[in-house]
Image (cartoon, rainbow over all chains, first blue to last red; front, side):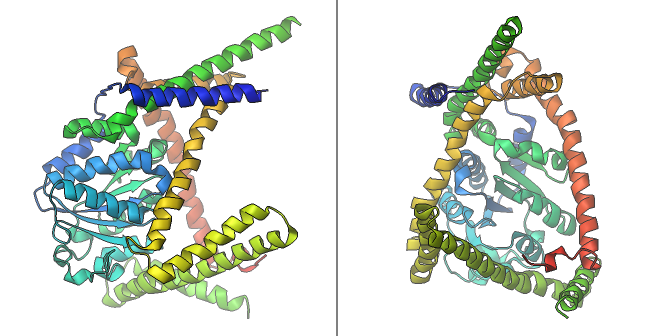
Length: 270
Length: 206
C-alpha cells in the first residue's frame, strides 16, 4: 500500500524534474518520423494559393500539446503562401483557432479575408461535415467576426470540398474520425491530422488503409516538424520536459517492481 | 399512439436518409441539405435544452438536500453566468463571454489535465507490476514503447524505435482493427434494429 508520504515524494520528484528541464534548456534533436516527413512534404509541394481547411477540434486542456503542432503547420502553410479556411467543430477550439490563425498570419504578413478566414464554430459536427460537402457557405453563412461569407474574397473561390485540397484536423479525441468517415468516402476529401500523443494509435488503422493521409502526433511530432521547418518553437522547448517525465515514469515502474519482488521474496521466506 | 408515431418517424427518416446516399437527384440533395443543415441543428438545440434542464433539476435537488453545496453552487453559477454573458455581449472575440472562456474555463481545464501527469507517475509506481506472465508481457511492451518514443532511444539502440513501430504497426493495429470492425458491424445492426422498430429502449424514458 502506497503511503501518503511516498505519494508526495513521487509528486515532488515529477515537479522538480519537469521544472529543471525547462530551466536548464537542454537541446534534444530527434530524427523526423516517416509520418511527419510525409505531412511536411505534402504541404511543401502544394502550389501557391492552394486552399486548405484547418479545423481546431480540441479542448483547451490539450492546448500544451496541440498548440505546437498547429503553430508549426500553420506557419508552414502561410510561409508557402497557401490560403487557409479555419473553423472549429469543438466549441472550445473556436477562440483558440482564431487566435492561432491571427498570430501566425501576423508573423508572415497575411491578410484576413484574402489569405485566410476563420468561420467559427458549428454544433453537430457530423451534420456540419456533411453539409460542407454540399455548400460551405450554407453551413457557415457568416465568419467568426460576423462578415457574410459570400462577401469575403477568399470564400468567393470556395464552394465545397471540391475547392479544398486537404483538411487538417487538430484533435485531442475522435473528432478527426468523423472527417475521415464522412468527408472522405462521400466527398473524396483528403484528411491530415495533428493529434495528441495518446490518440495516435487510435488512428493507425485509418493511416494503414490510406483513409487518413498522415499524422503529426504529440510534442515529438511538433518538434520534428519544427526541425524540418527550420524554426524551433514550443515543440522543441517542451521535449526535454516530456522526455525527463517519461524517464521518471520508467524509473518509477522499475523501482515499484524491485520493491514488489523484494517484498514477495521476504514473504516467501517468512 | 405514443409509441407508434416516434417509431414511424424513425422508420421513414431512416429509410429516406439511407436511400438518398445512393442518389444524386436534386430532390434527394435538397432533402439531405435541409435535414443536415437545418433540422439536425434544430433538434440538437432542443436536446441541449433538455440536457440543461435535467442538469439544473439534479443540482437544485442536491442543494435542497444540502449535499455538495459549494460544488452545486459553482456549477449552477457557471450554468447561469455563461448564457447571461453571451446574451449581454455575444460570443464573438473580445466579448465578456470569450473573456470568461479564455481566462476561467481554459486554465481550469488545463489544470485538471496537468494533474493527470502526477496520477500517472503515482499509478506507474504502484500499479505496473509483473505479477503474472500476461502482466509481465504488458509491462515489457509498455517499457519498449515508452523508451522507443524518446528522442534518446536512437542513442540507446537503433532497434528500439524499430521495435516500437513494429508493436504499433502489427499487434496494436490488429487489435484496433478488430475493435473497429466490431464497432462497425454493431452500429449497422443497431441502426437496422432502430429503423425497423425492433430496438425500442430509446422510447422508455426513465
